[in-house]
Amino acid sequence: MNGSNSKMISFPRIFLFGDSITQFAFETRGWGSIIAEKLVRKCDVLNRGLSGYNSTWGNIVLPQMISKNSSVENIVAFTIFFGANDCAIKEENPIQHVPLDEYVKNLKSMISYLKTVDVPENRVILITPPPLQESAWGKWCNGKGYKLNRTNSLAGDYAKACVQVASSCGTEVLDLWTLMQKDNQDYSCYLSDGLHLSVTGNEFVAANLWPLLEKKVSSLPIVLPYWADIDPLHPEATLLDTSYEFKTKI
Picture 1 (cartoon, helix red, strand yellow):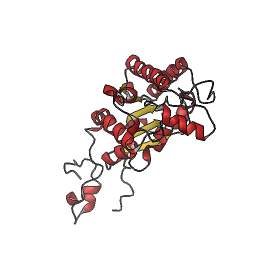
Picture 2 (cartoon, helix red, strand yellow; picture 1 turned 30 degrees about the vertical axis):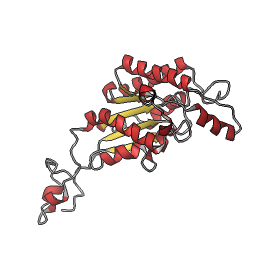
Picture 3 (cartoon, one colour; picture 1 turned 120 degrees about the horizontal axis):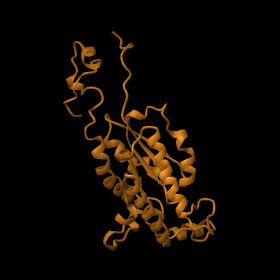
Picture 4 (cartoon, helix red, strand yellow; picture 1 turned 180 degrees about the vertical axis):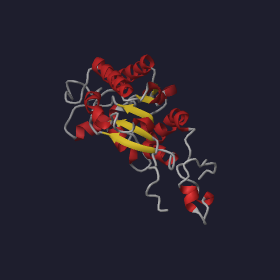
C-alpha cells in the first residue's frame, strides 16, 4: 500500500490578518513565529499581514483572503490587527488615515463577513494598535522628511474604539495600548522605531495573545503519530489509521 488512496491530512489553521506589525510577525522572534513554534504539528499559522494597509483596505481585500471555498471549517482562530495606520494624523498622512467612525465600521464589517463564511465571533480576536512613542517615531519621520504623523493619544482613541467593537460584537480583544502602558511603565522597550515592535515587543504580544489562543487550540491533537508510536513492521497500520489517538506528545 502506498497511501495514494488515503484521505488528505487537513491541518487546523490560524489566520493573522493586519498591517505591517502582522506582516513582520514572522521575522526572527516575531510574535507570529513564536505562536507558530508553539503549535508545530498541531496547527498552521498563516501570516496575512499587509504592510502599510489600513482597516478600509483590509476590509476590501478580506473576501479575497478567505471565502467559503477556502476550508473555513478548520479555522480555529482569526486575528484582526489594524489601527496603527488608521490613526495617522489626517493633515500629515491623508493616504493612510481612516476616520475613527469608519475604523469602527470596518472592524464590524470584517467580523460580520467572517461570520458569513462560517468563522464565528468566538474565533475572532481583535488586537488594538500598540502605544506610539512620539519622540522615536518623530525622529524616524524627520529622517524621511515628514512631520510627526501620529500621536499616542490618537492611537489610544483607536485602541479604545477597537475594545468597544469587541465588546459589542462578542469577540475577544487584546488591548496592547493599555497593557503596554500599565502602571505608567516605560513602554519604549516594546518598540523598535516608536511604532513597530522590537524583539521585546514581539515577545510581549505573543505572551499576551497566547492565553486567548490556547483556549481555542488546547484540544488539538498532534497531527500524525509520534515516531516512537509507529509500528516499524507495519507502518501503514499506524500512519493510515484515521482513528489513531495521538496520546504521546512530541
